[in-house]
Length: 165
Image (spheres, rainbow, N blue to C red):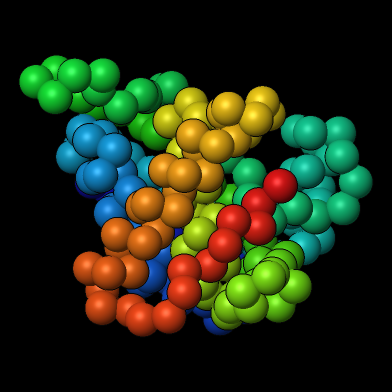
């Protein structure tokens, strides 16, 4: 899997953890090992510009996903996954820090960025949370992936609760 993490935010973030959890999520979702993903970390001003440009919404947001080849997980265990460009995930550490502090189970900015990375991956794979049943499916899968990765890494303590809107 080719995953690039580019930090343009000026904020120090755990880029290795972002890379690791993105790889874990894509592997767990059975995405072709030769697929490509880009993760870009930006400051609040850049994120606000993207949020206005693409969503017509004011202010910075936590994560945005820009799919390319619209890859989807295989529907059957024996099905060969397609290979291609997944797209871009854009993260904003300033928003992540605030969300982590404000969450019911307070957690660090890096933990929030890990959660947001998985959230972005799932959006690239076609998952959404507009309807209650879609939200339950996506957030359940998101929690399972984050919990699985944390267990694999031997991380203790509660996983971050979904703070993504």
